[in-house]
Length: 228
Image (tube, rainbow, N blue to C red; front, side, top):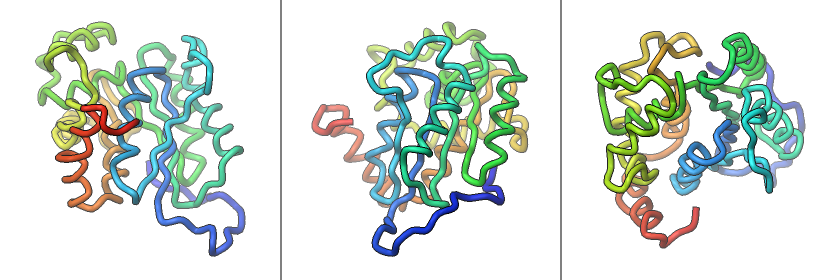
């Protein structure tokens, strides 16, 4: 989804103008998704990635619904000062929720100029799959549990967010190629739209910054030399 007609209405003093673009991400997972996206906080000074989490509270199954994720994003906007160029993303899965509910969330995002939605079918692990494999039709996995088990076999000692992010460019290419309807927000089975969020971030990043991210920053993070 692109930008729409309405932005945040407020005046910004010249001395408060910042030189980075904010990507605020509300996701329903309490572990895998936040840990994955938090790595991108180290991608570039040109962007700031803020994963919206409920502080000091374990996210329950009920609270991880698309509607609750949307409420978190709304609360975030009320709390923090945002620029019209900032982007807010709702990252959700399709496995546990009715299509009608997800369509309502997508419609809400469509009403705001910088709200976007990235859905995976059936789950975020489909996006992770494309980091290491090109053709997902070869996978026998159907459920989220299946996909979690399968991707844990792709790298030594199981899933590792750093090893996967090193294959980010492959993931974008593979997921985009597998997307059978790029003009629709709702992905078909074993497809994902998360690549749209990653592409949006990478448009801000210079090639040398991305190269440094892969060659220097990720290894340092993996070795515990920097904090997430």
